[in-house]
Length: 228
Length: 220
Image (tube, rainbow over all chains, first blue to last red):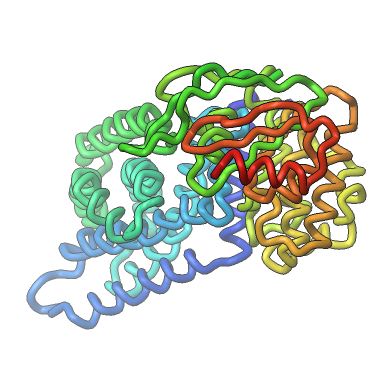
């Protein structure tokens, strides 16, 4: 069965980005190293007698993942500037939304890989158990990641042609990341403390609403950010 | 096949296009010569739909699907091989790369090499293959000879002439400041200065030297 045209184009863009990342591995290695180093710094810097690991872990997890994601998101459109491939994409008879969604999917898989490295390391370094809550924790991570990656992908397109794109991306995107980051940390805490999923449904709904609003807004605004 | 009507576009106080109108028929190759800043690239981008003109309209029969673009930037991904690049660009046009395309451009033995490992001349050939992968009816060329040595420029000229001849129904618009290399390909020539055409007409068998002289006089 053939996928509908917009989905085929979306997947073409996403799979191309993933293949390029698979070939170079520079961004994924940098982001993974960043996660390892930040978690190590927190592990050695914290005073275990002052604050319990279980209380500290959610904030540290989300701060680490957010900054790793910002590092990773910047590359999404950087590779399109090489040889002005972005003009070729804009010239091709595909919807701008296919370009955005392709980039979003590639970024989600990319950031998801970093999270797959970060979460077990957090469990190891902070000696906390995540496996019994793996499924609800995965739900929180997916919902939060979709939110901040959707905004980050849009801002990455917006800032890529500027001279200080890496700095500008962080400055612009971090304020928008605060709500999902805060809600994800609030949802992760009770989960790691062994509370039932019903205790965090409010946060999950907020995260889902954020995703719907910002993916929709990004789809609407993306054409204006890439058109000259 | 390609129509531009009263195109106007400015970047701040700089007028890049100042009332340009022309049309290009199938089989026609229009070479537009002009100095840096004359508005050539802006004109090509407007024709391609990459820039929306502030006034006027540009129309290409068949829309974006009918356009092939070759610029001085290759629009290729350095980490991907030649074959992977072509497959990706073809997928955006819902076609598969024609099997004879690599052979026609002398790229068969380089097909599985990453673009970053190729010389400038070979990269430009891959860029041509990318532009032709969907067999476009209209080819837009932005300074395609930039950075090429004489042999590579001649090869490029030959390939473009082949494309213009193939099928009889293709149109080409070429913008360059290199009158010598552009004239050989052209059926029609235009000279552009400060966003306007100061000359537009058939080449009528004139050689590069004669066109070059007329260009210097018109631009001066």
